Amino acid sequence: MTKVTMLAADMIRTHLSKKNLTPAGIESITRDLDLWHNQLPEPMKLNHFTADTPFLTKMSLYQVHLLYMGALMLVYRRLSSQFAQRLDADQAVQGPWIELDNAVLQGASQGLIAARHCSRIIGLMRDEDGVFRKCWLVM
Image (cartoon, rainbow, N blue to C red):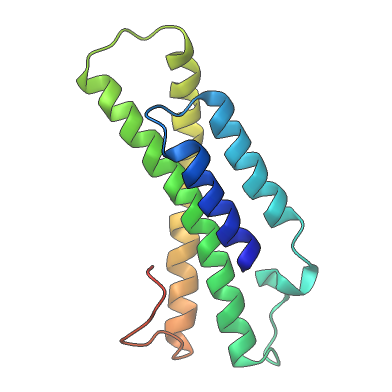
C-alpha cells in the first residue's frame, strides 16, 4: 500500500502540480502505475481471492486496489480539466495538443474502467460489511 501511495504522491508533486501536463508526463505517470500494478505478487491480485481469504486481508487488498485506481482517476481528472481549459481558451488544435487529445481519449477510457472497478470493489466491501459509516478511506 505504501508503494502505490508514494507513486500517487510523486505523481502529484512532479506532474500534476504543473500548469500543463505533457504527453511525455502522461506516459511517465501511466507507465509507473502500470509497472507497479503488473509487479504485484499473485496473492495480492483480486482474482486470487477465495472463500478462505481472511476478511482483513481482503479489505486491505481492496484498499490497495482502490488507491491504485484512484491514482488512475486523478490522471484522467487532470487531463480532462486541462482539455476543458484549452477548449475554453478556444485554442487552435495543433502541435502537442493533438497528442494531448489522444492522451485524453486514452485517459478517459482508463479513468472510466478504474471508476467501474472502484464501484465493483466498494460493492464487494459493502456486501461483506467492510464499509463503515466513518471510513477513513475517501472513495
